[in-house]
Image (cartoon, rainbow, N blue to C red; front, side, top):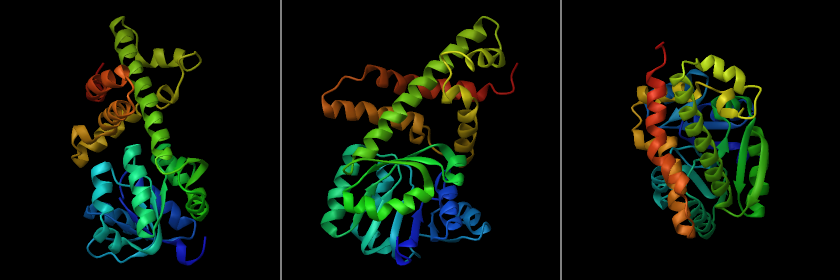
Length: 284
């Protein structure tokens, strides 16, 4: 990647965006962080970064989007907004979790407007973002993938090119459905075990060397902490990933003519399970 292309505007200094922006700075890139939240801008500035608002930003050769959902991505990729953030002919990397249909449309729209576009959602969490060891699921035309690959490898230890724009988001949607299906099963199983008088610690010890071991059980408590973070930040319940991502899977299945009853059940049940578990922390 050229020196010019390493000048990056990263929009969204949240749970993942902030460590990603810091990681890119550590790797020598010139990063400006863009966020509406003054506390998030201050957090990036405290580490030596330059932070600004959308209205005060100026276009750069590379734009990274790390915003929450389809609505936010759609707003930021309107032509007038893009003109404030990325130079003509620049490269757009979308790390948000959005519908595959939206990612595919944006790929076509950006190509028509002369921008490169890479559908590049990530998995791994904030700690791996800080380490540069994310898993990155890439949907891009070959030339855009080649332009973006050096930067992506500064962020991820496993960068997988899966096809055209939309393919990365399809893989991320499948990842999220698997994750939240596992989480829903684990929380219901733990409620059952507690009903028999078992402690979570005892069950996790057994599961840790048994066939039900998973990322969810290895990272037990992760979603309790994330729930508290979202509560503190005032994130609406329906904007949290365990609500929006399974619902998005249901919608995508409908569009494909597929039946997804388990995804629908997770959409309905999982938010309550997560809330109950987060609220009982500290109770006997």
